[in-house]
Amino acid sequence: MADLTIRNVSVLDGTGSDPFQADVAVTDGRISAVATDGNVEPAPREIDGDGLTLAPGFIDTHAHDDGAFFRHPGMEFKLAQGVTTVVSGNCGFSAIPADPSQDSVAASGGILAGLMGEFTDLAGYYAAVLERQPAINNMMLVGHNTVRTIVMDMDRRSPTAAELSRMRDHVSLALEQGACGFSTGLIYRPGRWSDTDEVIELASAARDFDALYTTHMRNEGDRLLEAVDETLRIGKEAGVHAHISHHKSAGKANWGGVRDSLAKVDAAIAGGQRVTLDVYPYTAGSGRMVEYFNLDRISRDLAEVIRIASCPAFREYEGRMLVDIAAEEKIDVTEAVRKILTAEKGDRTICIHFIIDEADIETNLAHDDMMVGSDGIPDLRGKPHPRLFGTFPRVLGRYVRERGILKLGEAVRRMTALSAETFGLIDRGQVREGYWADLVLFDPESIIDGASYDEPQTEPEGIRLVVVNGSVAYERPAADQPGVHTGTGTGRMLRYRSSAYGEN
Ligand code: ZN
Ligand code: CU
Picture (cartoon, rainbow, N blue to C red):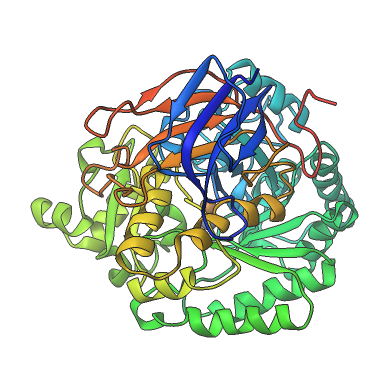
């Protein structure tokens, strides 16, 4: 007897092939049957899928959930979107390595907020997360900014040979313990003080594991193409698969630039290099405000498109555009920037900046090697960027159904099988016998994000059921009733191309 069956569904198996009618059975956490003849074993729990679409659980290739697994182990903002696995440790900031005597959250500017436990390495971090019974699976990258801070603090210089080799040891240890790659955030401190050779040396540690190099590139605006060249050079010289995070061409003067950038990527792929990318489906970015401004020369253009997400120094600014705050206080918008950033804890301000062209999002989503990553920053105290709650349903509702930019099966492939293969998630990302039962049941006719900039903490529409490692983690009894997070806590901590942490 199976543990669970989901009958009468249209299966999109993740490979991009056409949907087919089937009944699916789940036994011991894995998919035990995908039957097209109606012949599945009975089970104590049988769900009628009403002809809706059953797909592999979505994989968020770009997450900053390292600390959220402690603060919000129910991971409601991801689960309600149909996300069953996240890849954390992006943009050069990762929970590991850690020195319990140092404040690792400070180095990340709060992006990793929530970390708890006395861990120093990936194995310790995974053990500490599992104690909280997380709702979804996690895969980790080891971050350059974190590693550099541990070895060199915030020194604005190149590492000595000894420091470089200590950094490399940290990266290698994380990879040995199952991290899927090495991430950089080269616009951020201290990554921006590293030269290309330093990054190549550290990324080459990933070569021994055939693991990834993922990057928030040094520039995403007027020097985007140079940054892509640097990324491709790092991938080539380090001998690793390069993955470009949240691909965009930022700033109005640069809109349209993703075409040239993708042409460079295509040429590299045609030349035999392994390169992939991810994107979030919004015209605004979000991050730590202090990283985007030089206080000696505050950019008015940027200040005018900024909205405050969370701001420990001035909670009353959260959810408001900087221009409105400045008008009300009768100060210049650049002065408003200074006021926030020079306040106590001002460097922990997270902002949202409207810098991306809608047409560029569509160009990105039309590319075959483009995965979907939310880049959500899981700080729920203010008004976070709505991508934290809405990314996956927004792609399927707005860009697939309404705009027709890509087909449903292809969008699902780039949220599941392609991501699982790229990030080394063994036996995941497909609806297939023997695979882990990470599943999402949704209505392609009604799926849509509910989160907006004004009301970002809103769960999406159209997700009916989410299963994580064989257990029902989220379900919505009817479209007009709220979703229920069951608290089953069956998420696992994944290791690159290997079994999960704690399993053989
Ligand atoms: Zn980033
Ligand atoms: Cu990021």
